[in-house]
Length: 147
Image 1 (tube, one colour):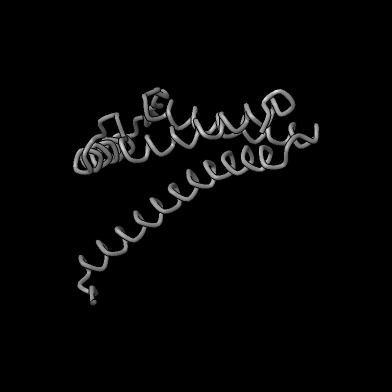
Image 2 (cartoon, helix red, strand yellow):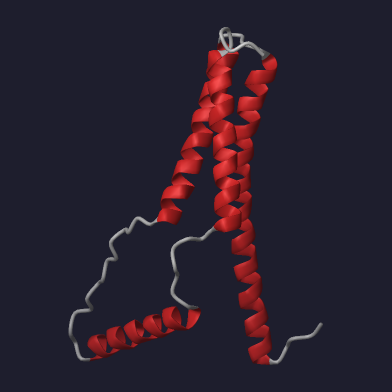
């Protein structure tokens, strides 16, 4: 594939490949930001619910605590991977409009769409696993756990 006549598809291919490498690196090496343990999260929520209930019973207004959005390396990596994939898709579409080499156009679109599909699939898989864990915990606590 000549770069001279296929500039958009070549740049889209590079952005898509970079997005794929970044997504795989973040998936296998991450997360990089330390997260609180489950016990800490549950204890914090129980404490805040208890304090809100006591305030409501005493007639005091309940204070709403709004957490500020914090940026960490994991959020930055996820967003930059998604943006690289979107740029690859856009460049692939532009290359298709300019009737560049079909292989380059398809490769840019494949990498971009593949990375976005990978990220969405990993998100929904994690949601499914959390729901499964909750169902198993409830089943174990109620004594209905049978395998």
